[in-house]
Image 1 (cartoon, rainbow, N blue to C red):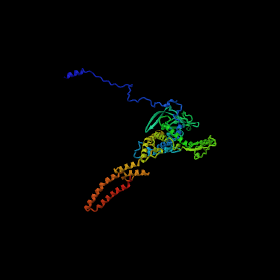
Image 2 (image 1 turned 60 degrees about the horizontal axis):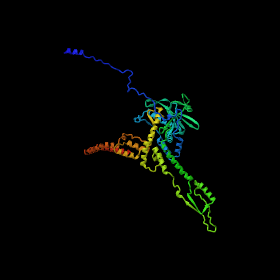
Image 3 (image 1 turned 90 degrees about the vertical axis):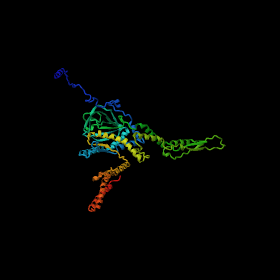
Image 4 (image 1 turned 45 degrees about the vertical axis):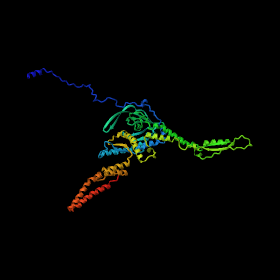
Amino acid sequence: MIMAEKEKAKKATPVSCQVITPDETFINPYSNLIMKSDTSEQLEPSEMVSDYLWLPKKYNQYGLKELVSHSAILPQCIKAYGSNIAGFGIGVRYNAEYSDVAEETEEMIAEYNRVTNIVKMLGAEMDTKEILENAIKLREEYGIAYLECIRNLEGNVMQIEYIKNVQSVEMTRPQGDFIEIQQTYGDEVVTRNRQFRKFRQTIAGKTVYFKEFGDTRIMDKHTGEYVKSLPIKDRANELMSFIVGNEDYGEVRWIGQVLPQDGARRAEVLNNNYFINGRHVPLMIVIRGGTLTEESSTRLKNYLAGVRGENAQHGYLILETENDSTQASFTEEKQPEIQIVPLASVLQQDELFQSYQDNARKKAQSAFLLPDLYVGYTTEFNRATAQTAMEVTEQQVFQTERASINWKLNNKLLKSYNFKYCEVYLKAPDITNPDDITKILNITERAGGLTPNQAKELTCKTLGKVSEDYPDEWGGIPLQYLKTSIAPTISSLEGSIEKAENNEDYDIVPILKSVKDALQELIREREDDVPSV
């Protein structure tokens, strides 16, 4: 048996094993980066214009200015945007990563104070928030606004100014070589390639050139040419643009309301013209049996030509007529008769096109998404509807606009400072409904979830005072919880007092009563200290 197995093993077929490894030309498609362009390749309409030509403006910005100046509603809408987006001021806060830190470090406090001072110093002639407010108003008027940014020797923005004469600024399309720009996000540095525009401003034959914000090259402000080196006083500053829409020069959000606004202006001109050239004596003169003398006819024509303005009111007109009868003199003559027929019924009683003008106003407000409350029309509002209008407008309009500007302030304007802990933001109004807060607090207090410190904080905030927590630990304990936790102890003490009296332990009874009184007094003090909601 053993010999048979040995013979079988000798006849077994040999098996070979070979390990195959990939050669150097093998490419794993999942372990290599995708080879592609590292810049945006989309084409813009401005590609139709040569690199070295200035882009034409789609709309006459001087015409937009005139239309706003003569409009009865656009100035209010524009002012509402500026006042409600940036008018509440600029604040400094810790960013999302450090906002919930239990205790501020010295480094965090130092950066907070530094950011606060930098924001204050950005404006040389006015408050920084006023500069942004004026820039927003210009953006809503022209579709675009510019901030001139001035850097110090360290390359950080130390001053900003808004360009007052927006109409005088021109730009090229993004042109020239792609420039490497390094951007810092936290601890990570990202390199991006992009092209930049050139800007120029021309007034009274004088021209000055600007770079687009973020362009690190040196530009001659007199020629617009890039150079290797140049004295500081001859270097061009940077412009940061704020644009509505996607056009190069922006597009006003009320562009679809140009015709209604122009029509409303013409209606106002027509009504105003009535007071200057309107007929203040609406009547008809009927002459029977005679004709006007040549002198009266001339006098009447001159009177009608001059019956305009306030000086013509309550004027008197004397007419003379001649008998045009051809009958013989021996017959009885019929005297000419002059009759004045009043035509007051054709007098314009009130302004024309009132409905048209009102509809034009509503269309303009709709373009800005503004209710009547924000433009001075408050006759149809009560407290409830006003509160709702404020909440909806704040959420749908102003909060989104502030978020967009906040991003530009932190990620562009102040990015070179590399702040780690803090960020700046545009402040918002407090639109909290006091009635809703009262209802919530009443429910919370009854459920035992309101602490004395919270009640004190809300009360002081309403009164405009600074709130400080109570020094003792009980300030952070809900009153209802304290009552619930002490009540069993008081009940137990009452039982102990009764038992001691029955056992005639008169020495311990006063002590137990003192403890009971102290607990009850503690509850009463808590109730007195908690402000009513």
